[in-house]
Image (cartoon, rainbow, N blue to C red; front, side):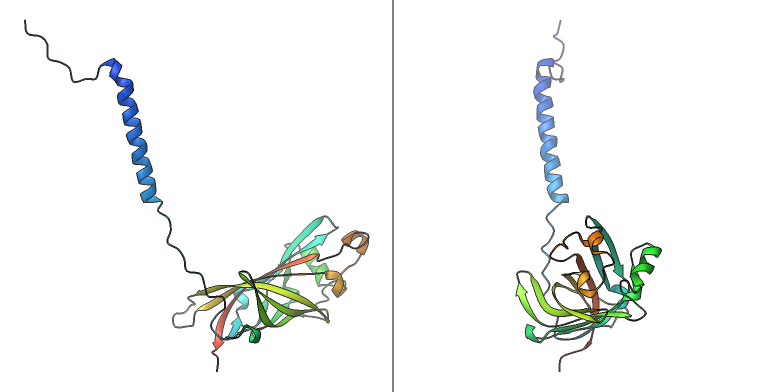
Length: 231
């Protein structure tokens, strides 16, 4: 009799080794696929430190002032002003840069009608008598990746020095086509509402004695179009 032909199937003793080889090969294939699929993104060029020299008009439809304020010492109320107008002047010399911002106080929104009406009242922003708050600053100094402008914040007719820390985030195409690119800025500032007479009950709102330092934080996001190039 002729011996039966040898089977091509692996013997039972060889199965564990073959399985390990297959798993290892699959693992290598997965790693290679992941590196091809999730390749490192291209480096994005940083925007210039400041926009091109010129005058930029703030777009009120895409600019907002956000705030957070102490509430009964341990709480926080957040909101924003929905209408911000003004101009930003960029120059080759940072000392010649300037901002002139107008905040329309009646547009305050904390997503609570009763509280918003209270904030518009004479106890706080008194919007009928003082329909706007303003921020005016001139000159810049560098601080790491940010710029600092020493400006003046005026609320309810009271003016106080308030430094503004901000970054120029860059340009992006505007619409419709043919218009100059739009500039984007992000700023931060801190102040004390008591400095502007906006406290109804110091003990309840600010603690006893009133805590030192700022109790209101501001964040400003602005989009602006260049309206006048430098002369």
